[in-house]
Length: 104
Length: 172
Image 1 (cartoon, rainbow over the protein chains, first blue to last red):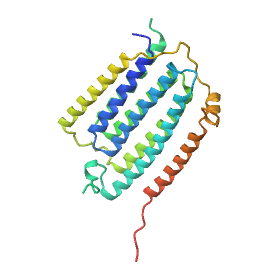
Image 2 (image 1 turned 135 degrees about the horizontal axis):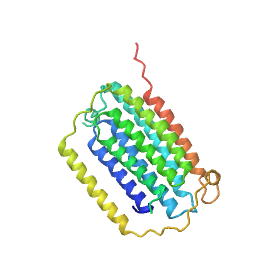
Image 3 (image 1 turned 135 degrees about the vertical axis):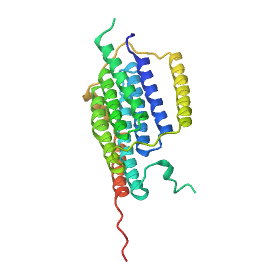
């Protein structure tokens, strides 16, 4: 086992990003797709923090990007869940295949 | 030389990735939400491991305490309890796994070929530094993005209320 460093964290965050992409491509339920998006956003946050720690330790820019991404993710999740609940009320389903009113 | 810190790092990494895989692959939606919770806790642990305690605390408060609870509530509101998700098509799964694997291999190849100039010393930021930098209006301060984010949160709050408001039945 090697001493963990920047490359290990980049490996974890890339793996987490692509796990999220896999979930986004295969899932057809809106809530589980939202969960995949949360995983993707978290992998990006981990990347920012790792670069801030290992490459520019005297600065705080990566940390602030992470804070702002967390805030935007919270707002996005709240709005998305409001839309999902409204969709469920009108269609009795939150499957993306059934939400096609705007398609034609 | 294997130290406790190294072992802790690998445990946290395994927790994060393993729970992430369960979160995107299980057919029971409630189990997916719980594994997402543990994956986010693992990421908070990695922030602690990196000595960014402030971000770890924010991660636990916002994600674990806020977003996952919101997701679990919306599962209760929209899903019949105990009902499994429909089976996914196998060809879609295979193509998605293939695309994801190729993307991962390509990006890791790029990362390992690139030489990052890693600094020798690391300083853990204190909360006082973060607070000062966040509210500075000088060069390199983050006062303007801070205000913009507060406006965004207000707009999102109003938007949520308007969207989720049950419209009254029209009476004539």
